[in-house]
Amino acid sequence: MKNTKSIAVGAAMLCGLFSASAASAATTLESVKENGHLQCGVTSGLPGFSQPDDKGNWTGIDVDTCRAVAAAIFGDAQAVEFTPLTAKERLTALQSGEIDMLSRNTTWTLTRDASLGLNFTGTNYYDGQGFLIKKELGVDDATELSGATICIQAGTTTELNLSDYFRANGMEYQPIVFDTSEQTVQGFAAGRCDVLTSDRSQLAALRSKLNDPGSAKILPNTISKEPLGPVVRQGDDQWFNIVKWVLFAQINAEELGITSDNVEDMLKSDNPNVQRLLGTDGDMGAKLGLPDDFGHQIVKQVGNYGEMYDRNVGPDTPLGLDRGLNALWNEGGILYAPPLR
Image (cartoon, rainbow, N blue to C red; front, side, top):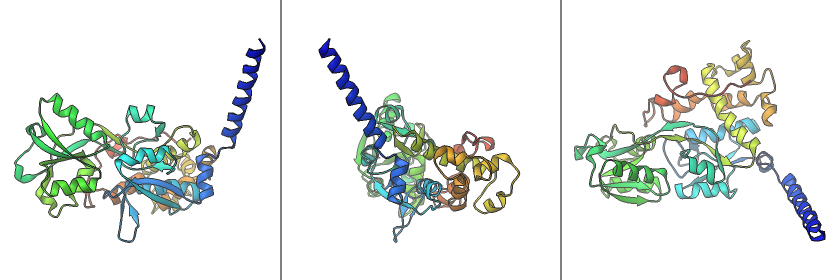
């Protein structure tokens, strides 16, 4: 009995130590504030999603997602530093705490969500895997690709999807694997492979890097679902909620017709939904540990979801992507956010 009691007391003391340690550990929000900036993981360079220019200025949908979080926290969309990561590096960098969040065209899957200690906070681009080929091959459908050599990026769901598709259709292929998307498109351009496979949005971005983009085409086939979005570590519900609701605020802003151009005038709106989003009524920000005008700052400095989409990958950009699935739910797409209330 004495031994049992001693073990129980020791266990209680140990639990107390762990509890004290956990209580003293800084939350992600506290760490970000202490550092004075958000550390965000992005690609090493993918047009439309995260790409630095010659002066090191980053642009893209994933970059804007990071900037929106910074605007919500600091009231300053520029209070963010970017860590370029390959597909193989990205999840480890988040798990280790090297970055505060990952915003790097990463597919939401059960394995990643349930067994890697990570949480996906939503989808900022709905995509699917496709195939880029040189027009001179005369191929019009993916079912004609048996025996092809295919360039592919390592450490992605693309590898698994490709294997599943060819096996299901009784076809064979030879994979040519590269570490980065830049190496992949260079291999394709140099003739190392007949086909390049990746998410369709990435194919459009990579095609734009070719010396003659018109020499290649994206086949009509879509062989997978690829919901892409920001990721955080598990175990910090407040941070999970912040990153999630920043994206939801951008989607709701578009639905409510709030843009970076009219946001100051919308501060006078009598619409309760607008008032809550912009912080002129209610305490939506306080519930997240943010200023109540966090939605106002996001839209003012970064824009709503539609603005973010159009300037980075929309029809008037080199990628030329229509909204498609990424249109609002009431405009023919599946983009939908819970209400701020």
